Image 1 (cartoon, rainbow, N blue to C red):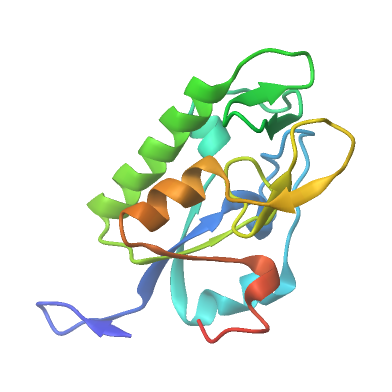
Image 2 (cartoon, one colour):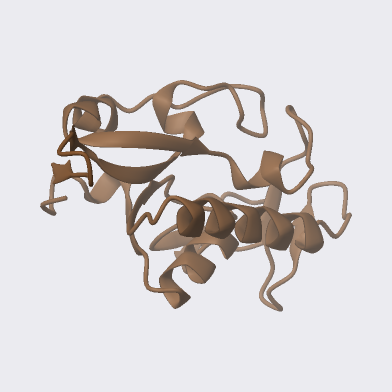
Length: 155
């Protein structure tokens, strides 16, 4: 909890992948509500974000993965890298505007993956790596954890 200049007690703000809060913004038009994440609402004021929507992509949209060359390609072969970069920059703008220092993001997403992403072959193969938004936020000093790390780490 934080006290503001008027003496009001406020919760710390935290960016959260909107899909983890039950918002239907995933590529398939669905959500992935996560009970552990949602329970943290007593400790944090959540700022829901979907970098892919903020980057101008529709919902639903074609599935995308990060190739070995760093480009984000959808399953139809279209290069959507610029959308992913734009979305990451918009999330960073939100974080800076609200002085946010923490984020809980969706593991394996090409935007939000924290430790693991899909390998770009669309065969369901996972590899170590970070999504575009996670990389940018971490470069700028924002702590990012995945929903899967919550039980292992004190937030």
